[in-house]
Amino acid sequence: MFKFKNLVLIACILIYSCHMSTTPNNQDKPMTNSDVHSFAKPAEAVVTHIHLNLNVDFENHILKGFAKINFKNITGTHQLILDTRDLKVSKITQGENETETKYQFGEEVKFLGKALSIEVETSTTQVTVYYETSPDAGALMWLTPEQTAGKQFPFMFSQSQAILARTWVPCQDGPGVKFTYSADITCPHSLMALMSAENDTLLHKDGVYHFNMPQPISSYLMAIAVGDVRFHSFGKNTGVYAEPVMMERCIYEFEDMQKMVDAAGDLYGEYAWGRYDMIVLPPSFPFGGMENPRLTFATPTIIAGDRSLVALVAHELAHSWSGNLVTNATWNDFWLNEGFTMYFENRIMEKLYGRDYADMLDELGFNELQETVKELGDTSIDTHLFLSLKDRDPDDGMNDIAYIKGQFFLKTVEHVVGRERMDVFINKYFTEHAFQSMTTERFITYFNENLINGDTASANKIQLEKWIYGPGIPENSFRVKSVLLEKAAAQAKEFIAGKPAKELVTKDWSTHEWLHFLRNLPEGMSREQIAELDKKFHFTMSGNCEILCDWFQHTITSNYLPSEAQLEIFLENVGRRKFIVPLYKALVKTPDGKAFAKKVYTMARPGYHSVAQQTIDEMVN
Ligand SMILES: [Zn+2]
Image (cartoon, rainbow, N blue to C red):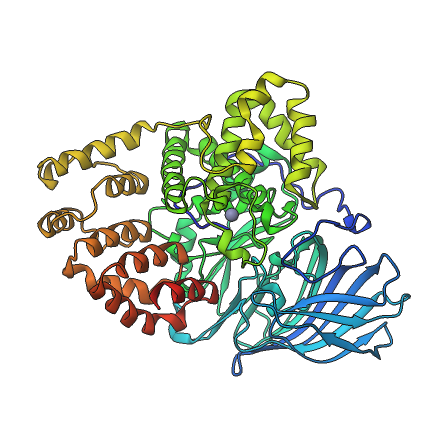
């Protein structure tokens, strides 16, 4: 998923073929890693395929139907254990003849929900769970027509990562278990249903859609969206789904999508998933993007009108390799998904836009990493790449350590061994572990055997264990100095030294330079200074959410009232956690700010997804 302040786009060549030559089935190698966020025991009986048959009920905000689950009984157990949370189960059967069987729920555990133990005969390979979701299912967001761009039809979408798939599908909800899936979904006739699977591009007048995901994926990559959307194709295997009123802007913004897919394949091997499409969701989507296979879910806040924020597409696309193909085995290994993806994203950006541009992204990222380490404390265990999330909601551990410290670990490695050797290693890593899960421990062994391979001089320079099991940013970290950002910082300095805003040199700045400029202005500027900047650069009325987020932090700390109405509109209309969290955080620092935050949050909360609500609830109350 894409949560941090980065950017960018894409372009290049193409090595497309509509299917991978092999779809390895790793069900023969059950994962034995213990996943502290799942009740399932895949080493005993592991799910291999799920077929969903669900009706989408907008009136009651529920999905209702059944899940037919195929599994492999490895140890001859009499129990199949699944993860569930808030699911209402009415009946479970076993075998193709559907003989009713007994089942039992375990005790409810915070975040994790309940284990569902199903009695099975040792010869059984299939169970069918009849169930419905709760109107409060953590993964699902039900929007009223007013909460959409078109204002005419309701909208529903899911966000399963990290452990919310179990709130809408009974499954083995840990990233170490991979299975294929299919689905029959029935929705209102005027709406289109889409999943992280093979999708049709046309509206079905009967409201019935069939889906197939032939490659094995982890449960957190199961996804569904239902709404009034249309499709536009960009090329042989890329396209975008969006609400009709958004379509024109989407077509302009994402025009380079096909080039990006081609460029990524050029770097790290053939794209394995057939199509790469994107759906632009309503603004309550809590993340920048979610790399649901074949169909990235994206926030409309990346539509800036100037293609300056589409780095997100490069990020989600990179997950087609790091994450979706080679997957972190548990959420403690999250850096294997996100660190590689950030590294890969930056390589795509460099390939398409050049080193200077990529350097800007790198330096902005590194600065954010330093901020995060400062906030968490440089001895904090939460700054280790390998996380310790036992007894915690994994969503809590997903700060930018996994992302940016992970990225800078890989950049440091590249710096030591050289790009050529690095690329050979990464290509081999993706190829040899395609459709498998990876633990940090196994990664270290693989790294030592395949990249280091006895080269102790390089190993000593890299200090891998220090990066993975140690706190903070290691001293040997690769550092970037962006020439372009340096110029932007110099302008901020001059303004603070007294140079009038109208004399600042800002011509042709990208979003990144503006962000760096804003971040180099001190906290608590005078209201006159804020007003002067706003008059010259019209930040308050900017349509660019990245810029607005940084700008509002200044207006909040300087108590600049002319921005308050726009801030309120922003918080009530945007649900992307990356933007709203720092703003609420800044607001609650003063009594007046806190009162304002509470007032706005009361209005805004129903429009936020549960993962955003969870974060802000703690902050505001
Ligand atoms: Zn990501």
